[in-house]
Each structure stands twice: as C-alpha cells, then as structure tokens.
Image (cartoon, rainbow, N blue to C red; front, side, top):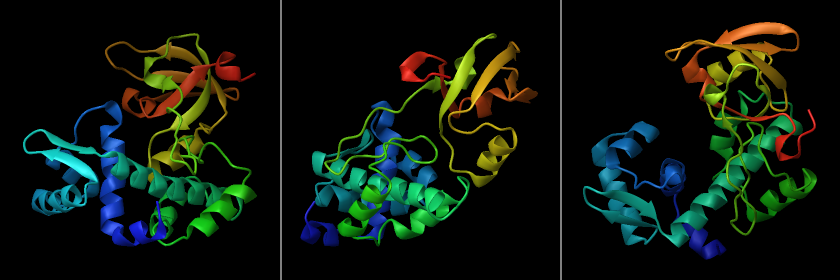
Length: 231
C-alpha cells in the first residue's frame, strides 16, 4: 500500500479491518453484532463505520448478511496485523516484555510506525514467521501462512504433544498458562480426558496439571514428530 493510501486510513478504520479479518477467518461474513462484541462498541457505531468502509471499498457489505473484506481491505488488514505481530515479537525478544504484556503495548504502537521501522524490526529479528503467541506474521507482500496446530481440547489420552500456538490475548489467561509451564515449544503428555467436556489432565516437565476443556480449546498443538518438530 502506498503512503498516500495509508494516510486515508484512520486508526479506527484499521482497528475495524483487523477485527473483520480475524472474525472472517472461518469463511463466514461478519455480522454487525459480532463486530460490536469484538470491538466493545455499540451496534449503531458499527453500522456507521461499516457504511464508511463500504464507501472506501475496503469491505463488501450486504444488509442482514454481513461484511467481507475486499482484496484492498484484506491487504490493509494484513499490513496492520504485520505491524502488530512484529511489534509483539520485538517487545518480547528485544525489550523483555512477557507474552501477557505485548498485545496491549503493540495495540498502542501499531498505527504509528513507518514501513521503514517495520522493515528494520523484521531484519533485526531475522524475518520471523510467528509472534510470541505462535500466530503467523504476514509477509511484506501480504502473504500469510495458515494458523498451525489443532486444538488441545481434541486430544486423546496418551498423546504426546508440542505447543505451537495460544489463541488468547487475555493477560490473565496467558499468565495462568505460563504458571503451568504451558509455553510455546513445550512438550506435554495427555494423561486423562474426562468425558462430557470434563477437564484434561496433562503432564508437563514431570508435573501434573488439569485444565478445563474451554481453556484447552485456546491451546493449539501437534503430535511430537509431526510438522518437522523433533521433540
């Protein structure tokens, strides 16, 4: 995106595009209600912004059916997501921020960095592919790999797994997982799965922990030996 095109997009517009991108990840059009819930704002405010985004040709919107990003809208969304995830990794790797702290800080900074600053961060970090939570970092050209792993909630007793990604920006959840030793690249074993959506018991570094099925649904894993990992 050119600098002149980027100046047209306000911080609010970028926030909406990013939210729509994440909500439509499953292939469904994004409703006004879902967008309002995601952004913590009123449906009336969302309706007004959706009309603006449609006028800018950043989304296609059909009343009662929802909104989808246009190619230009998706490109803009991926650019701001790239800023955000590179900043998260920079804060984590270079400045010592915890993985529970980086999201809020990156939210403040992502709208204000130049493309030159973004490129320098990228080079300094060695053109990384994933942020501190394991989410893929879009490339400079707007390409992004599919999210990795399957939900820990779908695992079976006896599975030996490695953590690839954690889908949660709630700092308290990330701190809790950290206390359990559930960090990226950590190997764990599923020792018990209770029926009827009951808890899952895990062995991590010789210690046993149980977590609820809902929380397990936010942790994404693969079996040891899959995907090139040698755990």
